[in-house]
Length: 129
Image 1 (cartoon, rainbow, N blue to C red):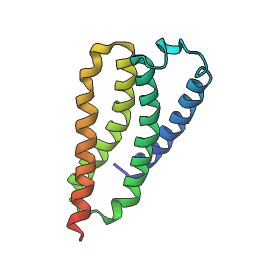
Image 2: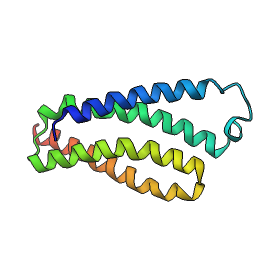
Image 3: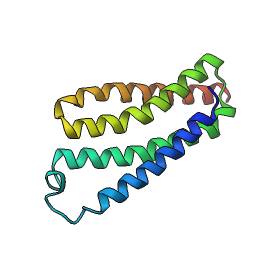
Image 4: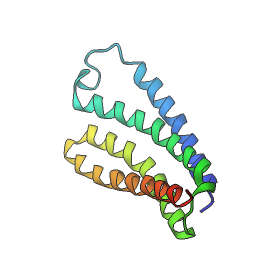
């Protein structure tokens, strides 16, 4: 898969994070919004919005580092897919957990994907040292 997919997905994720933050910000003054400031739904939706921003930038940074990674084509592809899918799955899990708390067990998927992707990047950088 061309690296531009991770870069584009990263920037789209940042944009969606900003838009979702703006939408959430329109109701921040309402103490009862999404069950109140300390409620699980409100915390999870906020975490999802931050995940969009942070994981989007992680994908952009991955593309910037890709040229220095000493990884086989297969290893690079695995890292790409892990970071890309983790970028989608983490905010989705946050929103799903806000909707139905029992879905919190799905977090193992994005966590495993992101750990695998970041581990691959670290390993690829260390091999080049």
